[in-house]
Amino acid sequence: MPCLLLDFFYLFSIYVRIAHLMAIKAVFLDRDGTINEDTDYVHKPEDFHLLAGVLEALKLLTEKGVKTYIITNQAGIARGYYTEDDFKNLTEYMTELFLKEGIRIDGVFYCPHHPEGKLEEYRAKCSCRKPATGMLDKVIAKNRFLPNEMVLIGDKNTDIETGRKLNMKKTYLVETGYGLKEKADTKADMVVPNLLAAVNDILENL
Ligand SMILES: [Mg+2]
Ligand SMILES: [Zn+2]
Image (tube, rainbow, N blue to C red; front, side, top):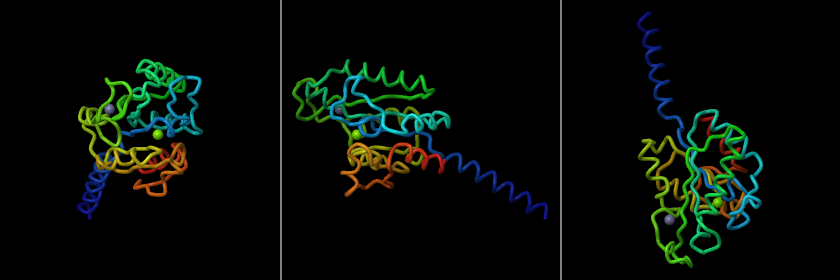
């Protein structure tokens, strides 16, 4: 009998260790249409409007110690609609807004390219524009995230494809932004109303 009891605790401790190993450690988020209203080529603080529930969602991720990265295609730079400095200013505005709420973002990565960009320096078929994985590859390697420790949330199927290429544990298509249009032929693991719903699902399964 004592042996059986010991075995039970031993097995349970292995289970706890495995469960911990399988936990979600990194969330990759699209920006426009997922975090803020996508009014096309948003690049000014006054046009940056957070979607409902976003602050709550991001706060939860910070509280649970889940690393949070924003990955965003910014072809407006290649098209000459705004500059990299405009993007960086808006990023600063956004991260300050988040910091005031106690939200920590672990990285913001952007792709300024487009194959048909107007500005030659950004005209490229690059390896960072989603659905390519270039924006994520380095941070994944650096932090040694395993596929089943990562999830991705976005409003377009190009976002979803990025997560699927990396065999992430789960991809979420939000119905904000372009999500309602995109969901008809999505390969996302789950379609959710918004970012908060996705984060709640992630935390339930943590
Ligand atoms: Mg988007
Ligand atoms: Zn790029």
